[in-house]
Amino acid sequence: MTVNNTIGGRIRLQHLYRHDPSSLFVVPLDHSVTSGPITRNGQLNRLVGQLAENGVDAVVLHKGALRHIDVRWFRSLSLVVHLSASTRHAPDPDAKYLVSSVAEALRLGAHAVSVHVNVGSETEGRQIGDLAAVAEACDRWGVPLVAMLYPRGPKVADGRLADLVAHAAVIAADLGADLVKSALPKAASGITEVTASCPVPVLAAGGSASSGADGALRHLAEAMRAGAGGIAAGRLVFTATDPAAMARRVAALVHDRTASTVLGGTR
Image (cartoon, rainbow, N blue to C red; front, top):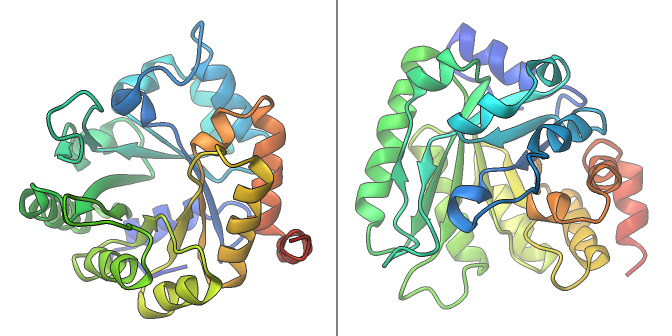
């Protein structure tokens, strides 16, 4: 676990690490603004409850979604309020922009905030400026910052190349993030290059299970063995037939290194 500069920041950061002081399992649920509903018939509250009961450390939500969540789930689950947004329908879907603030997130009871930046996008300059401004506010208010940085843009052919991901991760760290989330390289050597060169913990993005859940889990197990500080898996969990069961499988990779080794050995 990294060290935040303020007492409040350290308390909140420690609160995130509910099950393991060195590894974190986060489930982002902010995809609805980008892509549309992730649950049907108002079942977001039920989903969050399942996550709270099956080894998840924290969820990422937009501010309005909290109105539909039973606050009791946060007795055993930490809250990360996402400050960025964009939709897949926009002329430039990679152009993230701020839709909330650190102060607002604190009023909502957040334990941390997150910001998304697409490195290499047409609006990279503004997005990095937003990240820096949020980092300053986090430092002022004592709030941990999760920076979601992805190499994406017109000149980025492969956003999983180790040098690109390592660059994106160190941008986040240099500008004040406490944790970085990104899609890590496929090869273990590339993952190690990223995690070893970043001074703050790197969370492996879960991605989708389009190639099969077992394949996605093997990659995440590889990431944990190669030095990832945890896993941030949203679609892999909430699109599963049984989200609770999938959450338990991912939690085992994060909080039980033996499970990570066993799964990795099945390749």
